[in-house]
Image 1 (cartoon, rainbow, N blue to C red):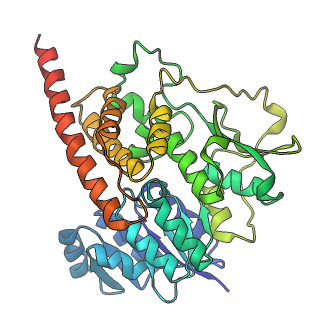
Image 2 (cartoon, helix red, strand yellow):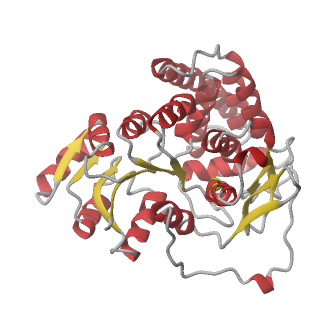
Length: 392
Ligand code: MG
């Protein structure tokens, strides 16, 4: 019997890849619901191809526009529509691949309805991990990751007992600025940052990969997904992107998962779990001349230290970090601030933040709102400063 799938964030880069996998295995999967932010042109095409019963568009105006054009399925708009989709009675799997934290309440509601969760959006765990994992435990819901590193750890753990874990090695390509010197770092342009050498991704995650903030988020993601203490997770720079992550066990064995860097692999693994499906790309092992692993340069990439600092502070500090990071990235992509200002703003916001209890959703949203306002205020003065320097 095929699995019924809902994709929240179907027009984004991961969402499109999820649909590619579904297209490849029509016997296995069926799309019953799709949601996007505002790209109704692409959503229209996806409706024609996949014939869902219900779609949702976050942007109300765009949603109403689509409603006039479409009569083959239900169209809803606004935030409540996401909850309706995430809890559709017929849904077996709900994929969370939309940017930002508007998926947090739908994620919690889907877990309460015991849906199988497939998670691409790691920010939901960074911001709401305490609440999400608490509900997942209570309802006995397993969250399957489609981040390549988390999928690798998940696969490594399939063979051994969780309590035997000594360390987790989370690999990072190093991103587009891996070879850029500290002096040149402030002048890295949005174009340079958006051209990732190994992975094709959305804009926000591309910038997070360049600062290594993405890797910091992945530490938090691993912590929650696999219940591994923060200090046992070690980031390694591995520019070849062949080993997607490794787990070291108490008897000294290290188990790694290797494969081509292709998002369809972790997506397919999560959707088909506990079964597996064939793939059409393979590693040419005999031509791998070398695999290198080095510790990240924390001086050039302060983001990892900032995540540690927020983790140490506890409560909603990670929520504040994520909100400040998102605002700073937007300002950077608009050319208002320099690349290194992203971490500067994040640091200032975390330092100024008084953490609230992250087990209460209202506090999470309150911290998010506070941090965005705080970040914007600081970004405005940084942008002014930069403008004045340009004039001189
Ligand atoms: Mg990743």
